[in-house]
Length: 269
Ligand SMILES: Cc1cc2nc3c(=O)[nH]c(=O)nc-3n(C[C@H](O)[C@H](O)[C@H](O)COP(=O)(O)OP(=O)(O)OC[C@H]3O[C@@H](n4cnc5c(N)ncnc54)[C@H](O)[C@@H]3O)c2cc1C
Image 1 (cartoon, rainbow, N blue to C red):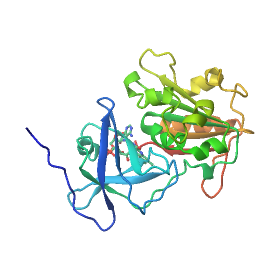
Image 2 (cartoon, rainbow, N blue to C red; image 1 turned 120 degrees about the vertical axis):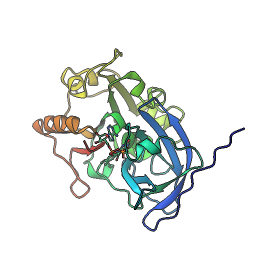
Image 3 (cartoon, rainbow, N blue to C red; image 1 turned 45 degrees about the vertical axis):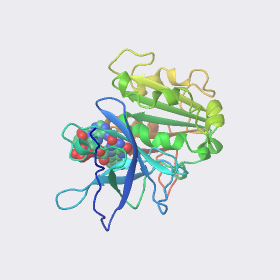
Image 4 (tube, rainbow, N blue to C red; image 1 turned 90 degrees about the vertical axis):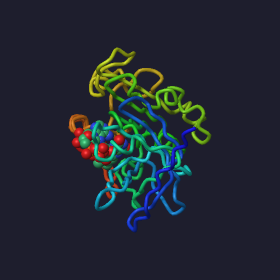
């Protein structure tokens, strides 16, 4: 029987070395994996960190949103598989027991601290932009801060809807947020290039008020007085929705100056 040898990597002074715990492939474009969390590693739900593998002269590191919540004992990630991508061309072959480098300083703006208090929290994502919102939606803290959490995930194809079963079940099996999520969490997947029960881009769902149907309560439009928004996805999505939000009275927040919406690109074009 063939037994695969775990791919161990040399220690590096700038990065922690962490063991891969599990890997889950969604389709030919996407996979998730989890690594052990070093005892000293602290982060806020929604932040990103550098992840990587040994490179020729120095480690090859890329930014990754942490998909697990701040209390979890493992760090979970949702990754693209870029054909011939310098990192993901190799990262997509990892197995449990292998090792990866982990940056020491998580950071980011998709955190509750960068938003003013509000009632409804809309999490708008495209593609792997879902990752930080998986972290936030599985953090009990968010259910104390907001009455409703509405996660919209826009993808091209139905098979790109990673975590669809868990999210459709309103995180029912989650030990810490399950009960609150059943009452407060709503998941709206939408596909742009394949037939699906909800189709079209996020802007279209806002415009024709499809986002605000039952069971989501409140006004049938975005309201800067009570709604808060986080955006994570392609540059085009962030540009378009960011401009739309500003045109109706939302101001962009940051860690230093909380506002009514926050943004983060899911990748650099
Ligand atoms: C703040 C931030 C957070 C990020 N979080 C994640 C994350 O959680 N998951 C993740 O998979 N990637 C994430 N990325 C992108 C990630 O850093 C890498 O670009 C990705 O891992 C591909 O690495 P690569 O070396 O294989 O290819 P790269 O040379 O980095 O990318 C090659 C090209 O592939 C495309 N591309 C890269 N990443 C993506 C993506 N996620 N979705 C669609 N197209 C992409 C772009 O056109 C890019 O120019 C994030 C980037 C930033 C800036």
